[in-house]
Image 1 (cartoon, rainbow, N blue to C red):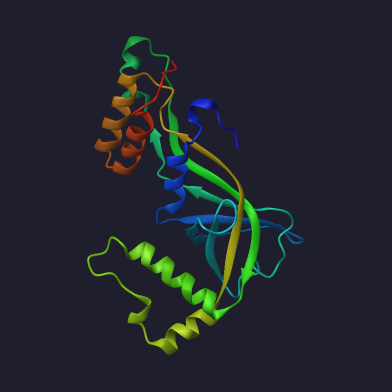
Image 2: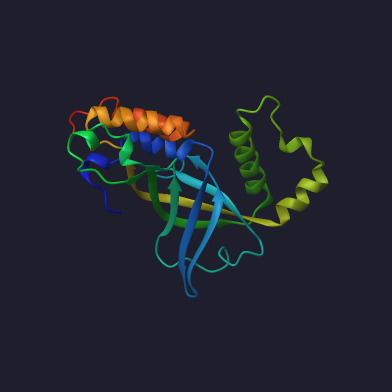
Length: 213
């Protein structure tokens, strides 16, 4: 990934991408070529040197049964948004502005391990459910479903574990714009109803040491 210095993601931004409820694109190179699946995941920081991502695939998905060649890659994506140059006060000053796209992303590399074990899968789906139900007023639990039904569902999936070896991460969130332009971006995003992207821009620029024109 191309990461200019002023867009390099810090530890807090990386941690947010890893721990928030989200899905990632799992990409593997196999003897059949590249395979990819979008799947929800749980970050397990205590596993291995850099932690692990846990997810699952449908048993009928060939990606789990085709051995990965070399590292596997999980692509995590935060909020993203189109940025209009009309939001920049500097447009009126000199006009040297163009549209761009703001985003946060992490490329997580590692060794892929397959788990075809009911106990592992049961623990995983409970962790995944609890993560995504945490903000609900009345959280749903795996135990709310009949045990026999849950057992049948578990037989239809296979667990995948990405043992993380390295992470490349980028937060392109208007850090290269003057302060007034950043304020304009935040206001523009909020007016368009993109509160998550606006909050990301605010966080990324709250303690920046310098501004690049």
